[in-house]
Image (tube, rainbow, N blue to C red; front, side, top):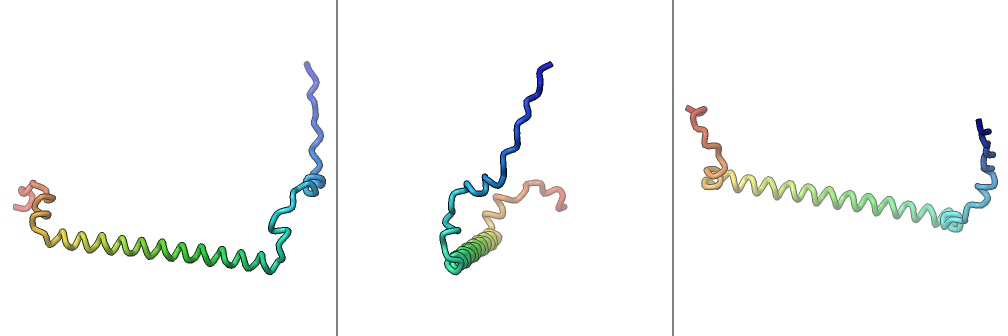
Length: 87
């Protein structure tokens, strides 16, 4: 049987020191908070815009369905031809 080679775990402290400096580390805390606030505002604006677009599309679908319900030829074409159940 061959001997198992044990590898020493990598030192975690050295890993933390070797990390490159990020942009967040270089910015002032006030600037970083302003950027985070602006990002959250942009997300909220985008979410609101998507919700408005969804509501508008839903209203358009309802209006189209209402128009179709008043159109006799559309109803006749899309009705089931099994009239026996209505006798």
